[in-house]
Length: 591
Image (cartoon, rainbow, N blue to C red):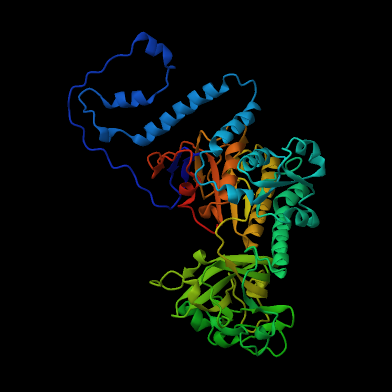
């Protein structure tokens, strides 16, 4: 559900589509009584702009002639919004006094940060002094503010900037450990992550919107290179006997090893080929015998029922052709003896797909089955399967307990199309949908980490689309959104603990004095200050509730018609508290 949080000042929760909502109870019938109302004097009438309604007007409107003034008739939500709006207007006028330009907001933020650092009760000086943070995009709008916030709190800060941005980098504080490089170069990334504990990736596109190469480097390839560099650095540390807890995903199944080859004790076999549970009685009558002839031989020695093809050293190939609508093929095997998946977040499947959907199944020791669909894109890639997205196959099954998993399998079902049973004639256009080929490299478990290792600043897709003014710009925006989503997917599949922040359009305003909306659902399009985004990045590094979450954030806005009275929780922390934890507590993990 959306969450409203005032940067260190207040938090409110707004509804999420399909989430639970608590509406304000209907007001009871009003009792008749006489109300005496004083008329405003001449000065009050001149002070209030014509047509503007204040919270006092709302209260006065309740005292209609013959109506009772009842506290239950007051809508506290509307009063709260208008009170915050009035305060924002007053603060804007006050903060603008003596401010010759918007650039002064950065100076104001720095003074405010210095006052706030001493009051942050949760700040651990020993911990921050020993934490080294790499900021990618340190010369950008968010990066400059974030670096200042980190230094004021005692962090060791390293920033990697491009050689072309040397002039901007010279303006960064002297305490920053500068390294020059490009995220497109893996060796530069490997050098930058050496010895760092946290990474904040807040790079934005270089150049004009629509240049595919620049967007690919910044939004997808750069994230891939940095994530790979972190994992490789962690692997190097483990080989030297210094495990930092990152990476090192426990191996669940290594299909290229001897145990998973033909005759191995953990080898995956073809468990079932035939009509699935969803097949209708008519289909079962029409395709009599399909249970024994639904999978075509895909290689020599394949039986009429089908067979899993194994390639030595290359993993496991699960493939064939289904000749009946409603048919299904399943390949699976037992979990390695003694392997306990308790304390893990999910699985990472390394596979080479064919662009079709598959279903991953797990079976617990008490016989319950759970499933999750995934899309196997063309080419080798990693797919992250979080435990909280597995759904029970039967009603009444308890929530999945990863420590009870004893068996895993993968199934394929053709999406559409019917073909002749002998495989010689198929309906035109359905060949690729009836045939399938999935090559499996390995399955690893993702360990549960206490905090995020990688904070990625992306962008709200709805905000980007709202800024498109013509078809050419809209096409460029869609390309950008696709690349951003690809980069987010790369980070999720890496196995690193992550936080993905999708802010609305950035504005240059002081941070910390306007309510913020946190949401999941790609619905926001309002703006937010770069200072507020930098503060969210800072807090996300050590907030357990921010780990493995993706969320949008923007300034508070008026909700759509019909949702005005849905505001579930109001939280009013002081400056020493963390507003981010209550804001993210209700959001979905592993998103």
